[in-house]
Image (cartoon, rainbow, N blue to C red):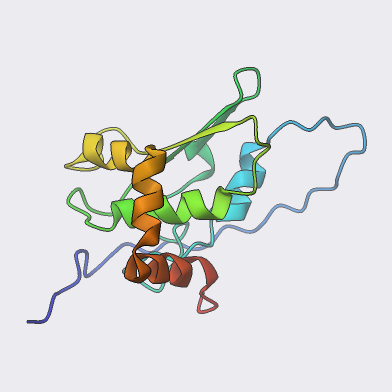
Length: 154
């Protein structure tokens, strides 16, 4: 039995030009949403040979930071409401960001409100440390995540 693509014809957008920014020696160690976006925008979609940015799964506006509370929220929008790859996308984000943030920050990864049929279930999976660890112990799933993170095809 051959499985078809969940979204056979995704809308592909042009990549945005990266903004060259100089390091300000007077800047504090605040976490910048644009830096986070630049770090994750090239993750490859698990189903298509396009980046999360190209498919508008992520945007600069989908990342918020509250330095005072030490919280970072990343929301993403799957290309279709019944996307079975939503948890894989979230796992890719979590793995890529694992060592990026200062240890005192709490990172929440969620699907955008109303963008997925199983929104509550996906959000619960992506923000439960034990579930994330268990998912990443699955060699097939881990291989898929690694392929999305380290693909040079983009």
